[in-house]
Length: 448
Image (tube, rainbow, N blue to C red):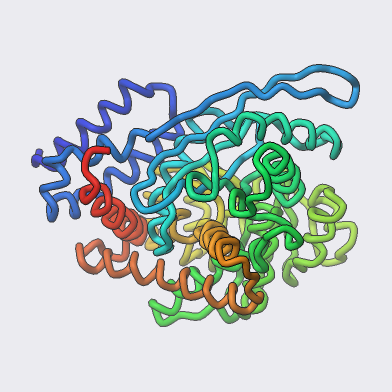
């Protein structure tokens, strides 16, 4: 075993000892560490300075209680989290997730992934993430407002426009960001750069809602173009029915592809004539309904219970846009069987490691989440720039910047892949490209 391999294994052993039950965090970190061997061989100074031990340990992890009162008068207590993982290249930046699955492991995995994702954008933002195990589903607006106000009462101690700038994630949309911003403003005065994903009337950016979905397609399109291929006429399977999925459907359709599925946690829609994103938008964003209602409104559509990744149909591109670990080994085998040539991730870490290995064995080109879904945080950073300038850019200006950033992310990943002869392993290419920028900044700043 080489010195570099031994070093990587020692870091993995250290994590296993310190965080034995943090499976999501271990999955994210181990996948990255295993891909960094070529750059560590080229930069022995990283090993000498024990850089990886610094990289995998958060600069700060905060856990707090969030008491709130429901409409029926009951008192409830949830857990809140903020993990400020790395600030080497800029202030902490990352989402807030409200979902029953949220725990320290999930928040650490998201924060760690955010370090490299943010680095890949080329923008000066570090990595963080946070949230709560509060479930907004079925809650009234008043209950969500009271929860957000209580959550921000503690979170506001740890964030600021030049320190840590949270954004939305699963369960946190424009409504929740509005309540969070209002609570922060009451305690600290108006600082519109403290949160992103805000409403347009109080410092938000045009194209922010569409950013992750649009960015996913810009990245996917760049990957296809590098192979001499095009999106025109391609059939796409998409999971999820939130912002990412909805606007991925819109942009895919605009670029000449046909999206044939959309899903939520109960089941999925199959429409061989192509999913209409406006119907999805009406059901999920306006009515806050379930995706099965799509089949009641579109004659060509069918609704099925279960996972969309168990649905056997011929198609060309898979875009998982729901949540982490939604594609397992057997589902990945079905993806290969169905003739898929490209998998690009709109959700964070939706594919298990053994599923990713099957993509590779099946000659599927794979765009990992940290690269393919970076559009949301990219436009969040552009929102920060607009807030600093006290300006609002046009939709076209933001969208053009987003397209440039996503194409550049693929270019960086491809360049690292070629530099280290990785045989179109764009996951390793993205990990290395993101890591090298952060590593250089950390080395320059010393042990801080």
